[in-house]
Length: 277
Image 1 (tube, rainbow, N blue to C red):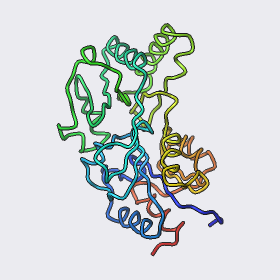
Image 2 (tube, rainbow, N blue to C red):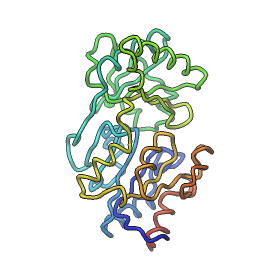
Image 3 (cartoon, rainbow, N blue to C red):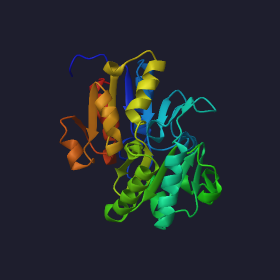
Image 4 (tube, rainbow, N blue to C red):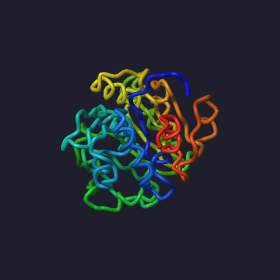
């Protein structure tokens, strides 16, 4: 491999570390622990919340985590998140009112909870069995709740269904203040899963903050992912790696290519890169 000083590895979850069964394999955990023993930190970089990570209980406690695409930073050994960046209240309220007007379901991450008026089982099935544990949920009516501590929204549906809702949302944001729609991040982390956040926060921003805590820089980072929300961390990292099960357009960006998540592809790539036994 090329002569670079990699001291940290950022790892997406869905479609990357997690297999098609939404589980992390013993082989993958073995590789993560081997890297830690070699002085190389593994950092989870995910759209999921730290509460969901802890509910799953699959990962070693020595890991940092960039959660909710950078809006929540954590160390798995700590009870509370290290940092949280909330959406501006006008943006949050515009999102909830727009989705309500279109009568389309919407979930919101608030701390350790997932707010929802109606649980959408299609969405929950895509995210895995952790979401079946009701302690994650708080059933609410968005209109009755303060919306100044929301970290991320998520919804499910095909693009031809969600695109008109997003167009309406951008129009509402422009009515609040010209140019305000530029603060809207709306992208698909995987087919059918739409994430909505503040455009000023992403995995790259979150990872840069974690690296600073570790006295490291982007030149020390290798990042593996599979989705559109992984682009900012690929752009940050010295060594960007895309999974072979990723979108075709992402695989054409000229990054290193790892085998698919159905064959522990991320762990296989790391074993080869770092010459692990």
